[in-house]
Amino acid sequence: MGEGIVIDVRGQKEIETNLNSVKKGDIVFFLTSHSDKVYDKDYFDTNPVLTAKTAQGLVDKKIKIVGLDAPTPDNAPYTLHKLFFKHDILIVENLVKLKDLAGKRFQCYVLPLKIKDGDGAPCRVIGITND
Image 1 (cartoon, rainbow, N blue to C red):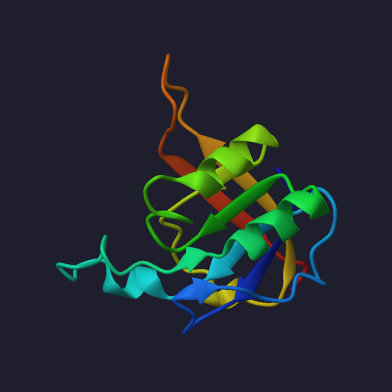
Image 2: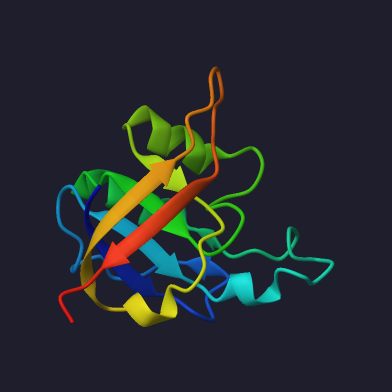
């Protein structure tokens, strides 16, 4: 849990954006709108990805969690996964309904199922604004 922010990067195939609004310890989600295509047959082949520059910028900001409304922040060989995990940054994938939080700061809770010996888990993600 922590303070979250959603950055609108719709229309970018390779996500490279200004991270000035990101603070140390933030939970940073990217709104790509790729989740709107979840039933398309090429959903897993056409996902937007973070650039190495954006990923390193998030590492440098010392964020807690990165997430997006797509199946993965990068594709095989998953270099960015390794970079994030090396710096204890968790990844949340396949988020939905980020549009209402775009550009806002909010209190964020990421609540995964406890799965023994797992390397991932479904989770409930909650964002609470001051609105």
